[in-house]
Each structure stands twice: as C-alpha cells, then as structure tokens.
Image 1 (tube, rainbow, N blue to C red):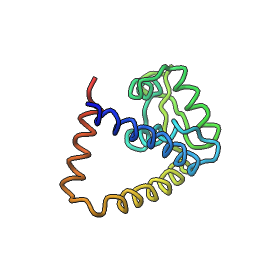
Image 2 (spheres, helix red, strand yellow):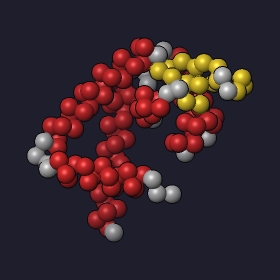
Image 3 (cartoon, one colour):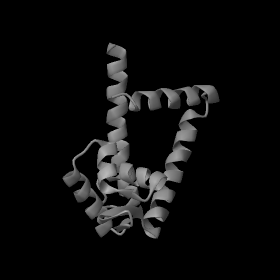
Image 4 (cartoon, rainbow, N blue to C red):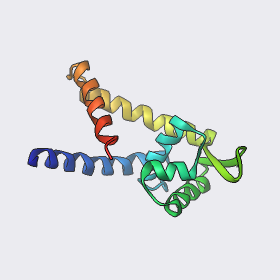
Amino acid sequence: MDALERELTVLFRRARAASGELARAVHPELEPAAYGLLVRLEETEPERATELAAYFGVGKATMSRQLRAMEELGLVTREPDPADGRAFLMRLTAEGRERFARVRTARRERYLRQLTAWDRSDVAELARLLQRLNNEE
C-alpha cells in the first residue's frame, strides 16, 4: 500500500500542475480546476450546473462561480432548460470549443509520445483500472 500511496500522490500532484498549464493554454485567466469542466462539457453538453457539481463532488456555489468565470471569458454559455424554466443548461461556445480542441490535441500528442513504447493492451488496461478507481465511492 505504501507504493500505491506514493505513486498516486505523484500522479495527483502532476495532474494538478498539468491542469494549471492546460487551463492557461486555453485562456490565460482560466483557473486550473476549470479545465476538467471543459472536458466534461465537451463530452456531455448541454448539462446543468447542478449535474456538473454532483459529478465533480463540489458545492453548487463553487460550480456557479467557476461557470460564471468561464462565461465571462467567453468559453461557455448558458441557455434555459426546456424541461425546467428555472434551470439553465451549460455548453461550450464556439470559441471555447476551438480553444479546448487545440489544447486537447496538443495534450493527446504528448500522451502519445510518453506512451509510445507501451504495449497497446497495457495502455487499455491502465485506462480500465483508472476508470474503476474513479468509479469507486
């Protein structure tokens, strides 16, 4: 367990640093935690702020603040939820989508360079195990 804890600590520390770099590459004023929001929105949009907050395990106020900041930067937009007039759905703007796609492409190219010597089945197994870990409650 010591080795697992050590390796996860290194992974999380590096992931936090990478999120900051990626967020700044999308927009110099974007906070590091917001990069994950862009990833999620790109995969699931449109999505309610409450659903985003639940997915990331943060409070509604925290999520609203992050989304408002992203909206002010022109990266996301809100639209009324046709199923509930009191709620809003969030989605990427065209500019947000373009900026995110550019950074995501560069990030994936870096992953490819890092994992080029790995067997494809090992990469698939790593992804499977990380998904399993992420789905644990």
